Amino acid sequence: MLPPISVFLHRLMNKTMLALFLSAITWTSCIKEKTVQPLTKKQIQQQVDSIVAARTKTLIEYCQRDLNYRMKIEVKVKADSLLKARLTPVNDTANKVIKP
Image 1 (tube, rainbow, N blue to C red):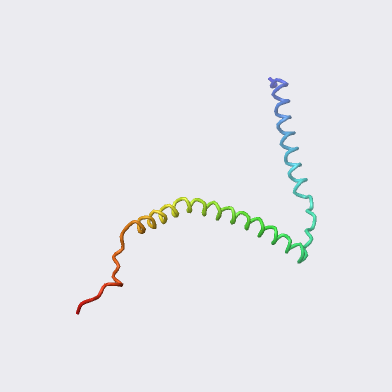
Image 2: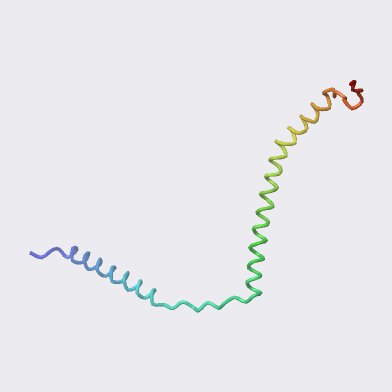
C-alpha cells in the first residue's frame, strides 16, 4: 500500500527546503568581499580624534557627576569641622611665659 499523497508532498517539500537552504549558504560563501583600502594618515588621525573627543566628553561628564556627589558629602563635613573649631575656645600657649 502506498502512503497518502500528502506524506509524499511533505517529504518532497522538506527536501526542497533543505536543498534551497544549502544552496543559499553555498552561494553566499562564494561571494568575494570587496578589497578594503588602507586608511591614509589623515583618515587615521580623524578617527583617533573623534574617538578621543567622545571619550573625553564621557570622562568629563563622569568627573562632573562625581564632583557634585562628593561636594555634597565632603563639604558638609569640612564646614561642620570648621564651625566647630571656630566655636571652640583656643588655648593660646604662645603668649604664656614658661617658668623654669
